[in-house]
Every structure is written in structure tokens, then in C-alpha cells.
Length: 385
Image (cartoon, rainbow, N blue to C red; front, side, top):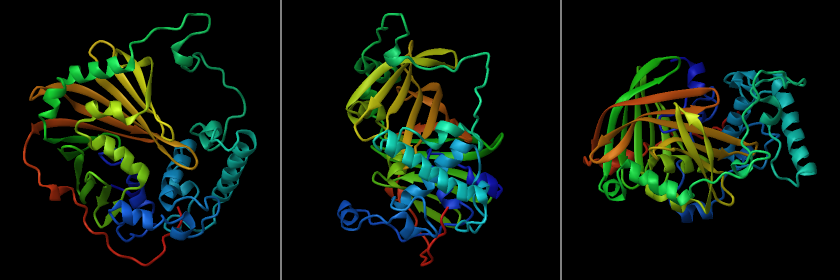
């Protein structure tokens, strides 16, 4: 697999491996302390303390630099080399990098001066997947679909939807019920991952209650591993290990929660229900989980069966939200539960599908399997993406 493809690769648990492979720019850091006391005693590094030549993003946490770069890349529809010199990412030799700094400053100024500092305008507001914003309106045969507030259409009465609690309970019943779900203590899945224009790779996924998960994609040049040990996640490719950032951990925790259908009701302060889009011919209800200070969670449930067909979550960055969409399909019965045997994870610019061929539940899994290998120590300050 070439370097270009590695730069857009996302791991099988849905967390980006970009941090490991951005032109080899970032070195390995010392493993972070696991306890909350240690984390509280030692403030996180700032971007300028961790990377070389940080200018526009001074003052943000270092772990937010790469997610911010991902947001820019997705907003403009470009790769790292559009702005950066390969293998020398701290250099300012390319004009687009200098322009990007000005654009970041302009965006922040617009929000500060017009929206009381709230992030209303982002890179995507103007670029919409293109390096050059379109200044002239485009005439199209079909208007873009936009949700009316609370599902209402102008001039029509507000539609009535089932309460969110009812839809979440129907979801639990659709998969087999709470009792059947709680009887599952572990799950081992073996299948095939399809990505990069149709290439296929063997993949193994290990899950252990309540919230441990490990995925292994077997590549010709070594395994790509993503794991969450119940507290913190990690990713590795041959020769490199990355401890997940706070935003990555939040995503990995959702993916790893074996009892997510039971726990989702307690993760958010309130829920909003609306009509969802049609997914693979199925009408859906959209349930949006909301909590102050956190990005929303969007859940699409089949109106008829109640099964979860799509989940969309977001990772906050200083520049905007990075979306991740997971589509679930091919539900089959396994030990009294309806389990998706296929899921497709999509982000701007990349996508992969896992098709499960073999599934076993309640098999012994050693906790040591989820422990991250030690990273190679280094004293070199990494280059700024």
C-alpha cells in the first residue's frame, strides 16, 4: 500500500490513523499517564510546544493539531501535500500553506466580530470540498435536501413523531431485548475489510464487556491495529504506536460499548426526533442526542423494524467538526441477538466496509490483548502538520 493511501486511511474502529502517517512527520511521544490524577497534575502540551513552526493554531492543545488538519483537508477536498512539503512539513515553501494561515485568521475574526466568538463560519462554509470557493450560484435540477425545523414544512402543521424513549426501547426490542444483550460477555468476529477502490484484507474484531475492543487488519506488510482498553485507545501500524486523543477516545468508547443500545439513553441530556432520510429503501426516524458542550449524536432507526441503520458522530476541532458515519446492515440472529454482519464507515474522502463471515459470542478473551505496546522513545520535536 503506498504512502498516499496511508494518509487517507481510517482504522477499522473508526478512528483516524492519519496521526501515525502524516509523511512521517510526527515522532513518538512518551506514553501518557493512565490515571486521572496524573492527567490533572500535568496540563496537556500546547501545539507550539509539540510541533515545529506553529503560527495560526498557537494555544490549542497539541492533540488537536492533526484533527484540525483533517478538517481542512476534508473541507477543501485535498491531501497533505497540497499545503505541505512532504517529509518537511514545518517548511513554508508552498503558497497554499501561507494562504491557509490567513484564511484561518479570517475565519476566526469573522466568528469573533459577528457571532460573539461562536464557531458559526468554518472552512467548509465556503469551500464545500473544493480548494477554490464557488462565487457564482449554480443552477441545478434538484434543490439540496434541507430539514425543516423540528420536521415541519412551511404552511403545514408540525408532524408528530414517536417519543425518543419509545424509539430507543423499540431498538432494544428489535435486537432481541435487554436480557439477551446482557447475557453476551464477549464477541469475536472474523471477516473481510474492503477499501481503497475494492482491495480486500482479512480483519478480526474482538469485543469484551463492557467496553473493550480490538480490531486487527492483516496487511501484506504487517498488521494495522486499533484498540480501546476501557479507559483509553491506541492505534498501531508496523513500527508506530499512537495513543488516542480525547476526541478519538470519545469515539472509540462508543464503538467499544458492547451494551451501547442500553447505555445510549444515559449518554445525552435530551433527544430530538425528526424524519430521517431513506436508507437502502427503508424509511427512518432520526433521533438526535444532545448534551451541553458536546457534539450531537445522530441515530437513524428503521421505521418498521426499529433496527439502527446509521449512526453519525462528530469530533470537535478548533476549526470545525469532523463527521464519521457508520451504516449497519445484514442483521442476523446470533445467540438470541440481531447483530449487524456488515458495517460501512465513511468520512469525507475515505470509506471502508467490513463484512463478517464468522461470529462467536461468550468466548474467553484475555484482557492483555487490549494493552498497547510501548512506543519507541524519542527526544526529537516533531514537525508541524
